[in-house]
Image (cartoon, rainbow, N blue to C red):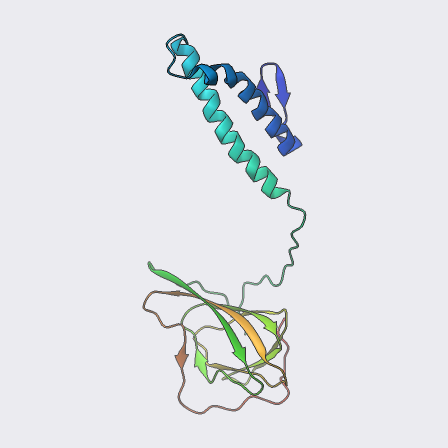
Length: 203
């Protein structure tokens, strides 16, 4: 609530009330602004009061901007996934580092394309833009991630992502790593090939 010159303005009433309050402050400031803060005819106490009101109007203008931002009506939000676990059911872990580094990539798999067997020493998150990606784990588990799915990737676990479909698969991938730490570690040895019919579907 703002109370100024006998007028009450409720903050909870929205940005219009906030802007109205600023208008009253500016109307009060006008005489002093026209004369100038350095004018000797203005008493020192009045100068200080005018300065205070000026700074208050600046701060409130910023606050009203925040109120406007909260009132956007043309933004749609869709919650994709909230989880405490990676895609294989293990607890999500954050990397402990004093030099964080985030890498964002767009990855495209042609039909039949594959990442090859690899693992991540850092947390990795992805979003499927198009297509359907099959991910096989070294323990035999298999997951499918379709368009619109989020992927909370496994850490320190060998896996292989393959496009078994007839159209390209596109992902946006975020590596939340650290300076000097590789995001991907390749595995040279041969592991079982992806199954034709995955056993599980990613959520």
